Image 1 (cartoon, rainbow, N blue to C red):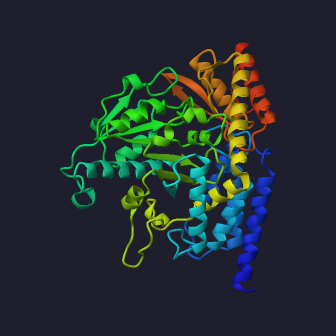
Image 2 (cartoon, one colour):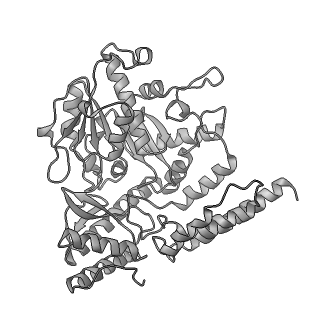
Image 3 (tube, helix red, strand yellow):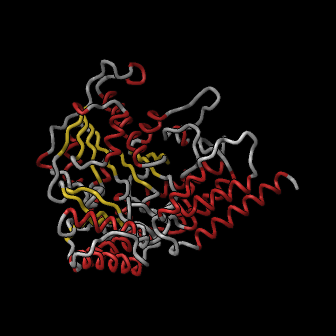
Length: 465
């Protein structure tokens, strides 16, 4: 048999196993059993001197890896604002793997370059952002934030006559960053990587809902980067963009919006008011692998000034000089996979109406969860403006016990967090697969755990489905 024929057989085996995994969604525990996790020790073997059979290697991965996966691709996973994967996006990824094209420029893949260019245009259209903006398809909103802040600092320094490309940062005018006291940790990480210390970061106070309070903003001038949020990580709240952005822009500041999941609210006429004024910002980040339900990893960094993005991320070389619109000149990576293709596939298949329906349907399910929790003796702590719910039981200890029992049940999974110093259950409805029946099952489980706890029955252990 030829090498190509062997390869095709191996791919068919992989596809068969992947189809079996997909067909089993909903039948497996949402979080793996303790036995499945213990069995991962099977992978702890020495690097073989002689290569092993490819089919046997794939079988090992499936036999021991698959049982220890978390069913994030299902409808009963409510953790970390993690979407499932739309079938067309997964199918497109399979084709991209077969192509094995580097998505850095037209010269390495005319197909990838074209499709990602169309995807970029559609993203701006779906999000109602300036059509002239630049879009880089990157790994995460965290990476996108790093890119955006680097571009912001470069632009502000240039306005003050400092060429960071020539002189670096030593001796440069000091740039300050204003960020919400409830800013996502990836913002802090991006700032740290870029060399911003705590002395250069001012925390903006927030109101009772978790939004930056415009009346309590730290001083802002033309050496300030202001980072706002579309979708606070716990409450899902939106900063008051229409009040803050014009004032910041008038002061000469750069405004960046971390919209990892919340920016997709702009795709829905019903929820677009939450983002009023956001289009006047200088830059935005948004994930595909959260609310758009594309495969990991998938995100976008968007700059209103396309040239600023291209100049900051430029990686032209003597052997690889391309246009400013090449993705290698819009992202951190030179060698990169064409992540925008899955975005294109999802947007083309959903259309505007489909994206809006996804946002509205999952937000509606989140509201249903909030009502059910409230009726079952829990306290919901946020207004549930989009797809996020935070709630508590009667005491921090009871909240922790119930959350742990739910996570161990195999029927569902959601995370925990801390809100205003209080431990909370954090539930996110992000998956296109989540149905009213999944919500009913979640509420039935939590209702039973609360009732058992009220009777003094320990809320621990794996429960029967």
